[in-house]
Every structure is written in C-alpha cells, then in structure tokens.
Length: 169
Length: 214
Image (cartoon, rainbow over all chains, first blue to last red; front, top):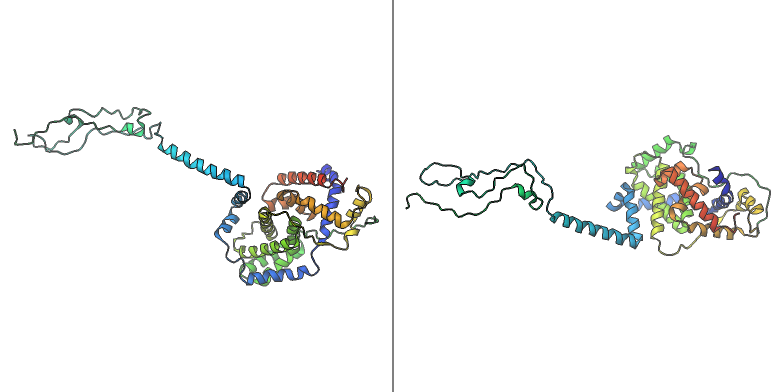
C-alpha cells in the first residue's frame, strides 16, 4: 500500500484541494435550525412501508435501485419471474416419477355392506365377491413411471355381476 | 496564476474529527441519542450541529452541487430523526448518520437523469497557500500556469466521471480522511473491497487528470 500511496501522491495532493471548497459564510449557522424547523413541520414523519423495508434490507434497496435505473435489468428480472412461473406450472402438471409413499398398503377388502343372497348374514364384500377384478396389489412393488402415485392404489374395474334379490326366482 | 511559495504545514481544513474526541465522546453521544429518541429536539439539534459539516461535505463532494447537497444533507438528518427508534446502537451514531446520507445520495445520483450541473462552493482564501497544493504546482504539475478555479472544475469533473461507489470511496478517504475500516462500515462492505475500489478510482482519476498530475 505504501507503494500505492507514493504512486498517487500527486493525485492525493490535488484531491486535498477539495477540502477548501466551502459553502457560503454562515451556512452552517442556519443549517441545524432549518432541519429542526422541517422536523417540527412534520416533514418525513410518515415513512412509507417501502422505505422501512429498504432500511431493514439494504440488498432490497440496491435491487430496486438497479431495476429502477436500468431497463435491461428490469426486463431480465421480468423475464426471469415469467420463466419461473411457467416452469413451476409445467413441473406441477408433470407426473411423479418416484413413488411418494413406499409403504402404503392397499386394502383389498371393500367394506361395503350389502344384503347377502340367502345367508342373511352381513359379510364384508371383498374383491372376490365381485368375481375378481381387483389386481392383487403388491403394496411394496414400485409403481411404474406411468402410474405415478396412483399406481399404488388398486384400480377398480367393472365386471358383469348377477345379483339375486331374496325372495325372487 | 498561482505563485509557488515555501510550503507551510498547517492542518488541513474540514478533516473529520474522530468520533471518540472529547466533543463527541460516546457517553455524551448516546445520551443525546436517547434524549432525541424521546423527541427532545434541542438534543437532536446538538447532534446535527456536531455532524452537519461532515455530512454536508460528503454529499457535496459526491454531487458537486451545493443546492443538491443542502437538500440531501437536511433530508438525511430528518430521516435519521424519525428512524431513531430503529437505531439499536450497534454502530456509532456517527457511522449510522453517514450511512443514511450516503444511501440517500447514491439513490439520488442514480435517479438523476440529466448530466450533473455543477454548482461548486467557493474555495476558501487558504487554498492558494495550502502546502499540498503549492508543492503540487511548484515541481510536479505539467501545467504550472493552471488557475485554482480551473483546477477545481477539472477535478470535480473528473470525480463526476467515476461511478458512485468509486467516487464515494475517494471522497471519504482522500478528501474526508476516513480510515478504510470506517468506510467499510459505512458502505456495508469489507475492507478489501474498499481498498480495491480506492485503487481503481485513483487509477481512473490519474488518467483523467494526467495534464495536472505527474
């Protein structure tokens, strides 16, 4: 640094000239009085929420200033926000590639109480009751990529079933 | 024309005093801040008087315009008064008010669309006899016939060509006499950044003012 100081010695002497630039005589005698008068007049009392936020987060102020003064920055920021929005929409519509819950157990028994034919006893109606249509779901088997999370849940399929009402032939 | 005279050592004017001086001892300052926080305007008036010259000078050297400097310096003190409740005392009031003034000034300069209109303060009568200036023109300046006013204008024009952060570092260090550490606190950056900005700014100024400095 001492080499730097020597290198810029002439410049530093020149810059020292600025210390001699003084405001009009008597200027500072009235300065504080004007400040106090403006405070008494209520100036600056209502600081906006934005100003308070800027004061709490100086980086936000710098970002805002950059956006305000540089159109390219403002455009780039807008484009980035749009890209983020579009990207998140696209991602949210894409099916999951990994099972979210690996230990989910599929229940094959469907607790539907129906009047049973002849027996008169209430039996829970299982998949086999309907003549087997529910695949034996292996809950631990990974779902295929196409199935996504819904691959873990047994798919109900419609099969032709004959129901006989009690008392009818 | 400036006549070269025997260099005379005298303390440079407007050099900032350390905040730890008797005038602004931490106890007195914190007491004034506490009173001002409760709305005691005479206490705040005392704080303003203490720092008005340094704050004005910093803003003036950044803007090269007396009217702008007057407005910005006053607004900085007004904003500081209303923000006193948020002042936690983590730094000195001196650093804090400097930061407010510097932020205000940089925002103002970024939003100023037109080319800066210089409205320079007059040089005081000691300028011609400043030993630094006398030494500069007596043996090193290529243009010895330069007048003080012309030199002042060229110097300010060169400063205005620097970016705001670089101008601020030069102003605070080479004009105001603040240390690297103080500047780092004011600018919210590390000392290495201050040093590198200072070096770059000096290089730029050296190039802009090559007719006047060797």
